[in-house]
Amino acid sequence: MLEELAKIREEALKKLEKVQSEAELTELNVNILGRNGALTGILRGMASLAADERAKLGKEANIVKQELASMFEGAKARMEERAEELRIRAETIDVTLPGVTDIPFGKLSPLTVVYRQIRDALIGLGFTTFEGPEVEYDDYNFTKLNLPLNHPARDMQDTFYVNDRVLLRTHTSPCEARALMTLEPPFRVVIPGRVFRVDEPDASHSPVFMQMEGLVVDKHLTFADLKGTIDTFVKAVFGENVRSRLRPSYFPFTEPSAEVDISCTICGGKGCSSCKGTGWMEIMGCGMTNPHEIENCGLDPHEWNAFAFGVGVDRVACLKYGINDIRLLYEGDARFLRQL
Image 1: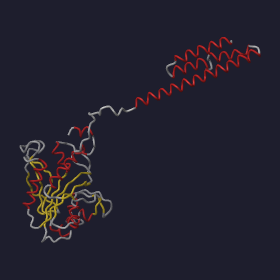
Image 2: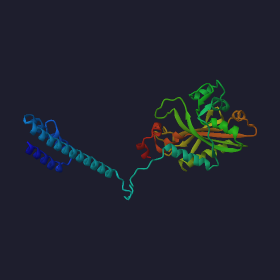
Image 3: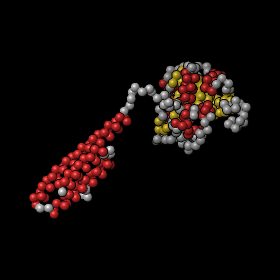
């Protein structure tokens, strides 16, 4: 049995040298040292031996068992170390390699592009930026703009109320009141910002959207000054070939008031389905600031007058880029942005 033990040891060492994977190593360990392994079979056969032979064989078997177990553990540790080394090499970045040139760059949202175009066009006309809070007092959002409590025009805008005095602003016009109360006239300001109205999202409506408003305060302003500013603004944003016109309308904070139409950007004014065959598309409202608003904000309407206009950035973006669903502007889908 000593010869058989030596043979098991010799064969185990030879096979151990050829092992290439942890699976092979585990299999060899089970075949030699497992419950049904070759060395375990030797130990089980010791019961039939004399006491002195059993002691001698047991001693030798334990030596072989410990030797092989140690070699198996060493082989396993070397394999794990090698695997870790290969993993680290695979993850190593060679900083000397040339840079990857086909990495896609981010795109600006159409809202951002159009906002900057409108802002820059108005700054070119001498306007400066003026901003106000999105969470606003009812007094600024309505009352100072000539919409006192129970005024029917308040129903034109479905409002998110925080409490009886505080709300989410429904337009950027509260900043008109703040500008009239804080700035020294004459001045020209452009007022950008998000506004909020109770609305179900669909292709043409959103409870959150972006407006930009212009306000000019001076002495002896006329409706012709407003019309000239609108014309210049439209051509700067939409192009020199786009015409504008004003239609009578109603806003409680301007008098007289008008809607601004531009010649259809799709058909060039010839008439198509987008403009319903009229050749014109509505883009914003405007008017001469109501004297009551000027007086409510602490200025003398006999000394100062003003005009204002407001445009939905979302609507302009949809017109410029041919977007038929306003929700696309807010979803942040990279596939949509890459098309523009």
